[in-house]
Amino acid sequence: MSEPTGLLTDQYELTMLQAALADGTADRVCTFEVFARRLPGGRRYGVVAGIERALEAVADFRFDDAALRHLEPVLDRRTLDHLARFSFDGDIDGYPEGELYFPGSPVLSVTGTFASTVVLETLLLSILNHDCAIATAAARMASAAHGRPLIEMGSRRTHEAAAVAAARAAYLAGFAATSNLKAGQRYGIPTTGTSAHAFTLLHKTEAQAFASQVAALGAGTTLLVDTYDITAGIATAVRVAGPGLGAIRIDSGDLGVLARAAREQLDSLGATGTRIVLSGDLDEHAIAALRGDPVDVFGVGTSVVTGSGYPTANMVYKLVEVDGQPVAKRSPQKQTTGGRKSVLRRHRASGTATEEVVHRVSGKLPPAAPGDRTIPVALMRSGQVVQGLGTLADARERLAAALITLPWEGLSLAKGDPAIPTTMYAAE
Image 1 (spheres, helix red, strand yellow):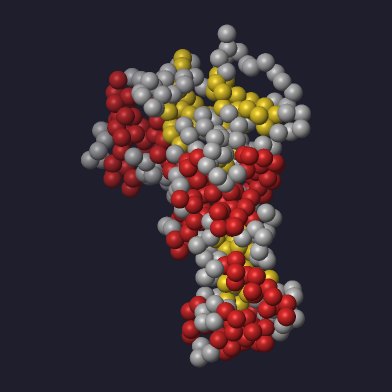
Image 2: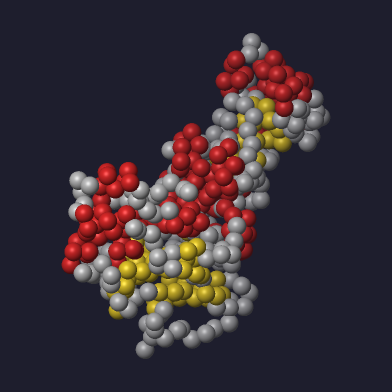
């Protein structure tokens, strides 16, 4: 049995539960929705990631004896007894992993009693805000790389658990591999890695370090050539490994200039098949700037695991329906639209997406148009994860297909409006 996730929440959710149990409102049927009012940093689209992790966490949302003892000073006996029996028994609909989302897109709709749905807010938002932020940044990097492989190598720049989730999100978004072995074990992501500067410094000479690495890993390995002098390092690498050397890695300096010089030097030494791997503070903008340079692989660390400056997707979890009736906030700048909702995404005959049409599930549907596609799918029914939601590989393919549908300006790295507008359909 997996570790319970019940305490991965905020106290106010359980105190709301206690009050609702006391006043008789806990059993009212409610729908909460997860959405983002805007995309961070003027980005053109968001990428849905973390759905599988979120569903697993909801299925494990329960309270064992240790958790209940911890809560005794906070909650009354009635609430503790309720939590002792708790398991989510409601329904969840939402965007499948790898789908794109835009401002106002109902990424998740969670329906059940108030008692069963209110307590999931922090858990769901902590997973989706993190994974969607990482996947969105990673997708922008993959787009900038223009088909060249990217390696996620940011584990040392984030929390150890977040590192595993970040590797998954980056892989979903198009990265080819990760340096994180736990992510490889848990999610089947290809892993890679050879050596750091410490290994070179361990040896008396660079040649000895390279010879040791080649002896252990073969001539197809990647040698890090910028510990001392890059030009000398490349010459030594080819001399030690031979012209069949797999790759060199450069981790610092003016990467574009160095990549061009390295390519010329490698070719002159007969190492025409040796690849060039660049790493060192790369983000999507730096990768795009290197598009015309002879780079074969990009290694990305800090920027991908921190969402390239936007580590949260700014998603919220809001109550939109009670007992079948729409409810909405009217707070300035934080208004919500009431009612449980679904989405039609409209496309031209060419396949280009044109509009995200949000509509109430209980209302009249928008008039059908060629190219309409319903985005949300059933994710949980009566507390059970729906079977056949697909694999991580399926999510990668879904995202690749979705990005092709964006208008060309929707793939721009510059700040701007969302790639397609979101409209709320109001049935007459």
